[in-house]
Image 1: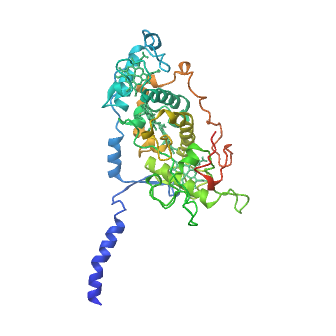
Image 2 (image 1 turned 90 degrees about the horizontal axis):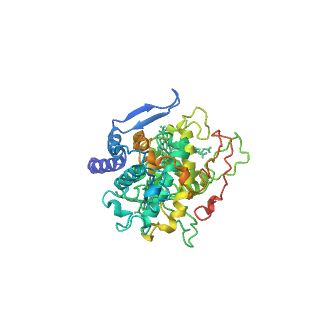
Image 3 (image 1 turned 120 degrees about the horizontal axis):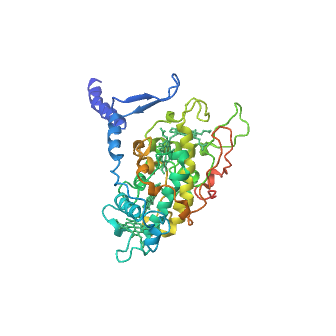
Length: 377
Ligand code: HEC
Ligand code: HEC
Ligand code: HEC
Ligand code: HEC
């Protein structure tokens, strides 16, 4: 018996080590985030916070350019968006864009060096739309980005394509084996924190406008037709939101009741707008660019890369830890008068309040058909 136990001991310790390998070692920091006694506390690992700070450092801005002198539209041949800028501002932005999006390739990443006015490279066509998108975010989505705003660097960080984007998953039903549609479950995906949740909760919520609110609002079951399956989509999205911001659920919720807005911190309202903003950016800017991108940039179902919370936030509560980088780039603020090509701005930005009972006018899609049948507004 003793000998047997002796043999068992190393085995148990190996098992224990394996079991704990997924845990983060102490000490951890905790910060109170809600009223005392509500358990609304943020747990941080100081070591990952340090690592994230590095990734979220802001590059030095170029010196401001004079705003007087001839306009870019008068000097250049094919300026459709930035025509209002002075030529000095225009050049400043071109140089900055190169360092944010194509630091290794430079101007030729978007331009034919023999003729800068030509639109032969798809990257230039995409970049023009990206400039409009960035201006639109800074101008029309202050409900989310406040006066902190965004620049190309917020998403790109010196990369041709942002490191955090999402594509639709090819979640085809599982053959004729009676398993049915797995809805992307049991296929661990980092997008949902490796949990057994639907691995593409983005198509229904950040492209479609399916109901995120699934909880009943009455004590007794009274007409709430949401299924457990729909709740799993909601949890998938929430897991993504929490990991993208590097926070716990309690950053936005008093987990006594996820549905209740009572006593919730203002960050929850900011997040509510963030969901609508990401949806609108995907519908109005990314999806229409699908045909512009070459095939090797598209996902497994042939769709364009899309934006979610992690695209900007990259692990921290505010992108770039809240640095107000956009302030240094008036070129990326509002120039509506030259934006004739832009879509109806704020198309999905509703004036709906954030109270738990208010209907947001969103359509509810049958969960079973998600991924194929998403309401496209
Ligand atoms: C990420 C893509 C991108 C990079 C990199 C880039 N540009 Fe541009 N450039 C554009 C876009 C888009 C336009 C058109 C803007 C508009 O329509 O308002 C443009 C227009 C121009 C024009 C006007 C040409 C004309 O006659 O119509 C000049 C000049 C120019 N860029 C110079 C540069 C220089 C110099 C660099 C390198 C320092 C550079 N660009 C890097 C995207 C880029
Ligand atoms: C909100 C996030 C976001 C912002 C802000 C943003 N982009 Fe992008 N950008 C994207 C996404 C998403 C893609 C598609 C990535 C992919 O194909 O995987 C993209 C793609 C591009 C591409 C195509 C690159 C390639 O090699 O295919 C260019 C060029 C580009 N962006 C330029 C810009 C410029 C210039 C700005 C600032 C004026 C900017 N972007 C701001 C999200 C952003
Ligand atoms: C950054 C803020 C934020 C974080 C973090 C967050 N949530 Fe949410 N949550 C929201 C918002 C906003 C809504 C309402 C969305 C809407 O109505 O469009 C919501 C809604 C929900 C709902 C639906 C409530 C209802 O009315 O039926 C559940 C369930 C939920 N969250 C669970 C979670 C869980 C679990 C976590 C942690 C994994 C989490 N949330 C993290 C902001 C957040
Ligand atoms: C286009 C870039 C971008 C995207 C996409 C984005 N955010 Fe943000 N978010 C920001 C910026 C910039 C701020 C800082 C605003 C400020 O300073 O108040 C911010 C702030 C927030 C805050 C407030 C944090 C605080 O402590 O005050 C929350 C919560 C938040 N975002 C949640 C989300 C969620 C959830 C998503 C996805 C559904 C999302 N964001 C998508 C850019 C973005």
